[in-house]
Length: 572
Image (cartoon, rainbow, N blue to C red; front, top):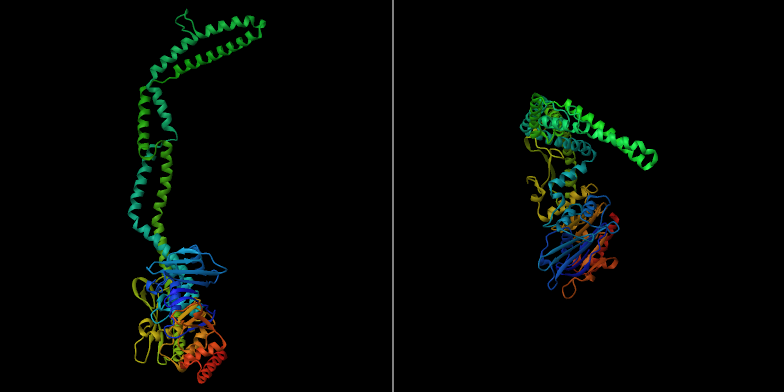
């Protein structure tokens, strides 16, 4: 991390070891700014009072290595962040006016996105800032991982059955709550289908009847026009002297045909007049037939109009024409079949729901049994760890219980609430001394005790909790001597499976670190880039001596410091 203008820190770079990093320094030198800086990078509250006096803004930048394929990587990519060789660059700026900005992988993001990533990146345990395993949901997840296959197997089956049950319940509820609406829809469909079936319309029938009605309604005018046209073309047999088109054209054709051999052009015209004569004869014949076939029956006209009225009644309700009406009938019949089948579907879903609830009861009981067994082993292991952390009389236990719910599933002879991970409510409890009732760890321990409890828990869970980095602030409050050595030893043990950062004032703890960072002020009271240094060799011995005796050059303190380092190296 790089820290600028934050508290007493002017400009400093903090290089953390992949294993165990101890941050030490005089009281007030700015050690806790490491915790504060990390909190800002993880979406913590932006306090303008943190901005160094005279500066416009405090800036914290960090480079976080991520494991490929984790949900943290996916969430960062969703936010538009780009990884830098597998690492995520994070930046947070807090202005003196209180404005805050966050950047993730080169992209400006809401501060809330950093907070979303925090749970998966760092577990913070401090005097006033406890995260991670203090939440019951995380405690349950950690217990499940600690239990291993004993929980993983039934939990996977349970999750599948639970997901199917939710889908069945949603569909069933929709069918049942819409029963009245479906019944009304079915009645309307039946009425419409019966009305259409009683009329028995044929495709295109409405257009055909409209044409017939037009013809029948003007039968006399049509017959008169056909007669006049026929007479004009073929002559009037009642008037022998009348002149008709057929006779005139025939005469013209004879005249031209007589001389066609003398001029090819005239012969062509004669041919065309011959065609006209044939066409006139055909039309005259059809006009005669049309007049003979024309039906002026008023009874037929009445029947047609009555049929058209019946079809019009259908088109007013079900479609713009009979073709659309028939399409509506086809779709309505399919929908009615679907609605009539809903009652059968309700029965099927009800039976499936009851079967799934019974299956969940069995699986939930398996989960409860497995968690209860694992919780006992966990409590024993953590209690043993606490005995070496200056809490010899403390007892840790897991409360694995359920809540009554008449709509739930049966577990252990009781009907209890259930969710996507089972029916169990898991909570970590602490009894700090004999006679004290077990209470949730957030309420049953002081700040220093709480950090040690969380250290013991993290050591037991080492390798099972997915959080890659742990930050302990004042984990050694109120302890010293052998207990302090044990704290250092356990932090080193935890660091074998995760990154561990500890702000400490105890040399017994710092000696076990893979890297020790010294935070020190300059003469003007600021911490500059050179004010955060990695201690090695003689420098580390000198700092441990100062922490032991307050005297860097004390031979006794130096000997003790070297002894502490030798002990830590031997353990490692």
